[in-house]
Length: 325
Image (cartoon, rainbow, N blue to C red; front, side, top):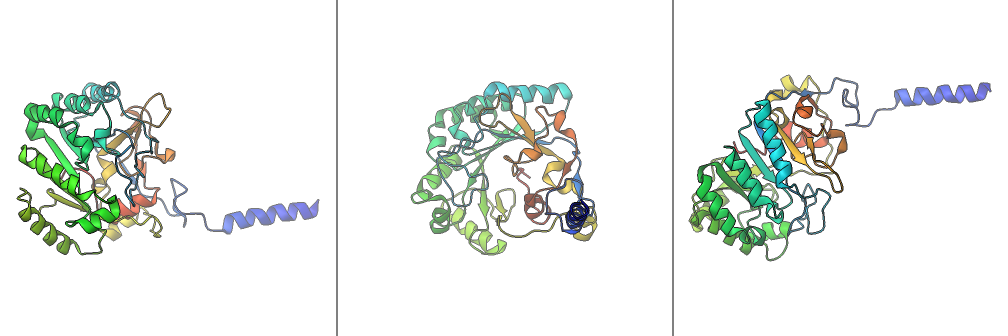
């Protein structure tokens, strides 16, 4: 019995002295310091993930969208309207609705979802690869442009200013259809911006110079040096070790909690087989159920613990945001 008690005590000591794994405790980091949290200052942007199905299977898609990935089901118009109603009834003052996927145009309800958002007076930021699924909805898009052209922005994903890097990420024959869709959008009078990534290893300045040449070559009305026209996201290396963000980090890094995306945004997702969508803090955390904040926007209003590598890698250290500006 004494041997068993001694072993149990030794096991307790081992557990207490061994370092805790990073990004496990929402209140403390692995070193025991208070973990940084971000309070919701106001719901400026509500993101809708319309489903993870996509016509492409990109090599480094953070959400692993593909023609077969239906882990996030299509949101319905009725479900979206429920959240728009809550925004109105609660007086949340939400300005922008962001729409992402997957490829949003794969969702057959997308035109009706866009119309519902625009008719409520929201600004809409729609992320797309501008390929065949979008062009199949060209007529519906033109009708929406006539409804509220100044409040609808389409952000087209181009992973580089040249086809080689883009197709290495998105697959063969993905460049030409994207450029054709991009040109159709601009010629039809839509407000279009570009989202790119630091896949090539080039500096921000070099990428912007390359895109400036690309915009001029294709007569596209965008300023490569304007971060609203060309957003360049830092590449997220899933295998890279990143530090946890403590409360002390804000002062050390010269950052403030209100600068982080989850200070003013939330995202609605619907898991495959679920009866109701749920709200998560941001676009980067669609699958981690630890970050489910509830089924309603009211439920999701509490602070968010920065308890995921993406919080450090992308938002705090990378200084990135998915919003329009």
